[in-house]
Image (cartoon, rainbow, N blue to C red; front, side):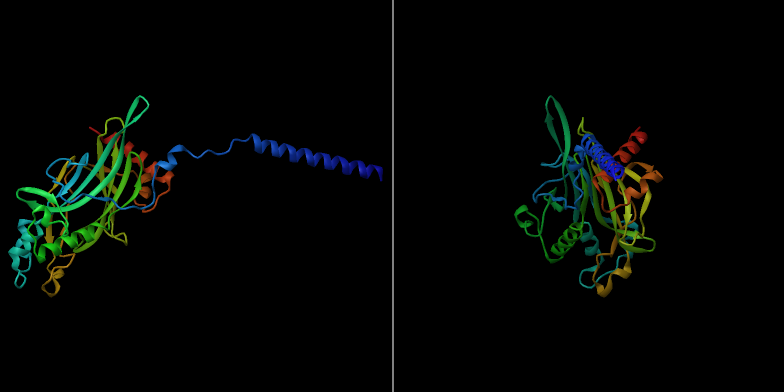
Length: 311
């Protein structure tokens, strides 16, 4: 009996010792620290800012913004004008003029910040807007503000502008970090032998030391993945002025009224360089939702891609 009691006591002591050692190890083991950069990436889909009505946008950054990313000047391609149906009352000529009546603008604002004795640059915001030429100047307007900015409006112009803003409001920013962001924007594109709404994805990369901005673009494609291309990206020209030549699809003029898909682009905006996206990065460039880790990995991958391709 005494032996059993002794063995039981030793067992209890041993267990207590093991528990104490385990507790000590847990106390001594460093707690995992969340990296400081995690909170810097906003991965909640958000809308870009609307460029303020009255903003004049020519061929460089407008007031209130540090960069003009792209200004698109839609026009029916001259060789395609004859394929535009001649609609009752409106006619072909007016249809072609209305297509060219409105421009689109995409801006970015990179701001300077002081951190101790160092200066760093941060991507504050992305902006989108629509406008028209007023007295020789390209001015951002809405249907509600057109009159106060001198734009002569009618029912057709209001419809064109409202439709443009309705489509543009589908744009989202899935990732916004201090020096990196993605913008997914809908574009009517010639996809095979049809016109479809697809998404362009723009990646904005800020040089935190100089404030310069690099913009990459690739095709996310449609909701079903049609017409996507995750194997290549193009490096957009700075202050890009896009002629945005449009081709018509006569079948989309149903009931003699143009649909949203009546006109489409079949070329990307002007770019300085085309780059192959490495296979290990393709899954990330096609994602629609990100964690902070994934956003940081994509930014690092794209910076490496541009560093290797930079002239």
